[in-house]
Image (cartoon, rainbow, N blue to C red; front, side, top):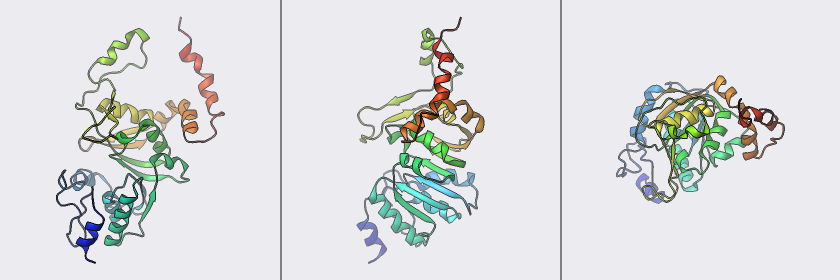
Length: 272
């Protein structure tokens, strides 16, 4: 069986992958040479040598990014919920001779909470806006990150960031309507024909959400792309939310809630 027949048998393809002999899996992709054109923006900002790096590729699809990262020496855990994409990714890895560098698992992003391991690089592109519980996913991943997260999501237009006070009165909520306030639009029906396109945050909201999960944006190499690193100071500010994360991921939470309960008077009792 030749390559072209294999590609046809594994269709449809969402990743147009350039195989070692130059054959492409989706040369007529409606988005163009996707996701290669995104990789061109990202690649120069990553270490050329990722030997020894443990990488998590979330929503790996047919494995384009997993292949590129494995080429640089990384060991990749590539996860997706769709067995069709995982079958494609397995086939693609074999074409490049990288099947020993890429582990494929059918998993949800929430399942990462149960993994007893951390990752030097978490690749989190094109997934969050498809989730019903986006902030939970970021909370989970921030706990598993050692060095770098490459994050991308669908956004609302505009890059304005408003100056948000540390606190404001309940009767001062009109300021939340100003341009650049962190907001995320909820899409109840469909966007671009996709019923799983749930969210479209603005730029300010993305940065605020990442900070609230203990992640500092260090670089923004292209539209909708964010490089983030763990930040201990930001994590310390959000430690009182830990009980919710533990409960949501099926872990014991009663001890962790003590801090939240102990501090409730700080925000529930009116100041004199």
